[in-house]
Amino acid sequence: MTKRVTIIDVKDYVGQEVTIGAWVANKSGKGKIAFLQLRDGTAFFQGVAFKPNFIEKFGEEVGLEKFDTIKRLSQETSVYVTGIVKEDERSKFGYELDITDIKVIGESQDYPITPKEHGTDFLMDNRHLWLRSRKQVAVMQIRNAIIYATYEFFDKNGFLKFDSPILSGNAAEDSTELFETDYFGTPAYLSQSGQLYLEAGAMALGRVFDFGPVFRAEKSKTRRHLTEFWMMDAEYSYLTHDESLDLQEAYVKALLQGVLDRAPQALETLERDTELLKRYIAEPFKRITYDQAIDLLQEHENDADADYEHLEHGDDFGSPHETWISNHFGVPTFVINYPAAIKAFYMKPVPGNPERVLCADLLAPEGYGEIIGGSMREEDYDALVAKMEELGMDRTEYEFYLDLRKYGTVPHGGFGIGIERMVTFAAGTKHIREAIPFPRMLHRIKP
Image (cartoon, rainbow, N blue to C red; front, side, top):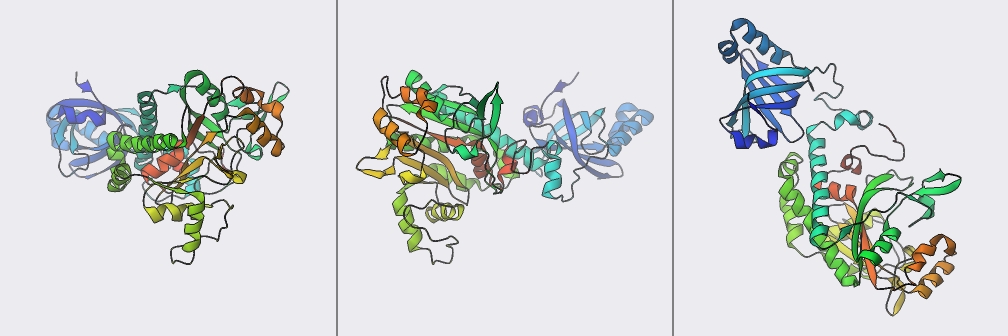
């Protein structure tokens, strides 16, 4: 009985006969030879069947029957394929299977996603099948590498995994972007961020992070927005703003390195420029203040590549501004110390400048925009209460959050990253909808 292996592991079995459980991604051939493109979730590679070999092994009647079975295989039919692993310099994968036997497990009839071009709506309607395609598999492998690297990074840096609730009685960010539901007669909301609860975790455990789905009822159709996405939030007690920026930079570099290490074939499939990724790891990220960024945008707004609207100090950036800033420096760029008026209530003011807050957005180059947002949190009880009153917020909705400032408050801060934006950046794909298995967008809730 031959050993059953995955495609990614065939390199360890050169010259040996193995069996692979796979799906037929495509097939071709003529006369006495047939080629199968096989996939099993770990990789794609080619199997080759020769009619004379089947006749020699099984006799004419059975051999012809088995070879005809191979010739008739339809796209996405599931099979057990047995064969001898051979090195193949012509193949990008580097190996090929000389097929010696095959067994059909599940036939696939009239598979809707053929090798021809299909429209986006058609592909999204068939997302459950589109996920099987070579490029979509590659994106999911990169997503997996980023998730794995996230857990590895925070474990190495002394953080504990802390699970924030998905159902909440209050809003962390913009209350106009909440999904509301009924919680036994009481209004409840799907979490926009685990941050407020994570701060409680930081007061108990020092360094914590969470990772899970969050929800934003944003009526946006851009290529960078989802209504449901996965987010990593981290909180750190006894932290300075510069230390937070250092941690964020190290984290993003660890994610990029994780993708290079764990998903090199996926990057090759997507034709991602890995030299760029290596440069982002090797070079220090740029750091500029919000006001410096506004000055820079104003200075260059008449340049040929300045495809953005004029901004004044106090205005928030749009996507074109973020794109220009990060492309100007050519590396991921921190923009720090935004106006308090356009940021969340919990952010700590810059010492000596209450109009600005100790925060940062990390802008990715190549047009990918903001991938991380973070800040120092206001740890002073009276200052936080005053800010909430200034904004007309109901303190009773945040009693647990205010308690954190009453019982042993400390300087602390944190940041959050939307995993799908990071996946899109690392993979070099154009739209965020491909960075999550089943995207939820303004006009898409199925499949």
